[in-house]
Length: 213
Length: 213
Image (cartoon, rainbow over all chains, first blue to last red; front, side, top):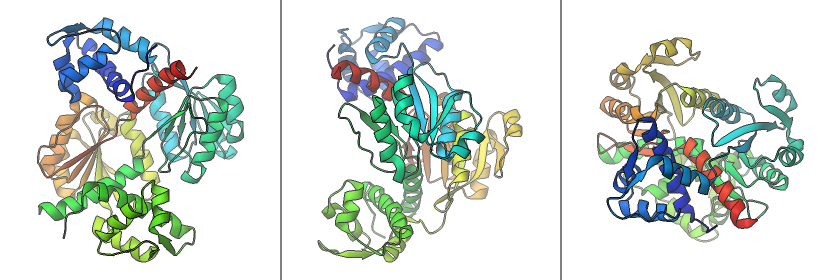
């Protein structure tokens, strides 16, 4: 299959989400212009993205929502949920675990959690399996886990990532403020730094006031 | 005060975090090269950023950590925590509330929570004040809240943002997958789409396998 560029994957995964919502609202067909407006993109970009899936569209084409969803799901692998794990069950890890267990698990599903603190593992109430951190590699391999959410303290992030890579994950979602590098070249890393965002917002709120008052 | 460009604010807020960690580790002085290495930036960029604070440095300059922290805190307003609120106390909102209450509240502090579902407000256990959503504007004004975390369902995001803007917030941190536009031009918006990140990771895990196997 032809390799789809990263920005296209990014936009198509948002198109998929949008199609879900339109379908829930009873809409059956949608144009590239309408999709583009919602996503802040031009209709042309959206048509080019959809062209990667093998559908040629011209300005004014209305896509069938059910058909387009199926096509995107096939190309991006949304038909079967990806098995995922959370590494680090401190404050952020526990919050994310609660959150992910509460939303639809149709695209990814948390199946295991890890923490280096065994006492902590005993106090967490959850329906997923929990393991001490030294068992990451073996468990990821055995359960065929594809994605790992890294929510350990920053100084442990690289080691946690290395263990997940050794176990064979395809990707890491790094929630720590540290740069994490994949041990194997085929593994991707995406970073979401929530506390960093809070800090930047605080700085912007302050500097904004200075320049607008 | 001279306006500091957004990317500089961004990097300096990371430098601040890094200086905190170095200080905790007992380090007293640090060079632009060392700072740049940690942040994935050149030493030259870091020196230019610090120059915005009024310190001219040349290659090899070692900055005094305590002094540099104080300077950044002064320019970015990190000396007093920014009063913040969470709008939307569903799954993600509750998870973020628990998380933010558990970390140091030195840079921002959650002081109020809002939800349109009054029954839900009664079931949440927290030390902050909770209010129904129709009281956002009045409460933001009265408590002088500067930042709002938007964690409502996507279709309610713009209205929630509008109410916070009317109350006088300086900035919005949008955790919904929707584009939110500030009602007043002086208000900034930053977006963090956690579920979108999960979806993109699932897509990358799938397409990665296709191209690397």
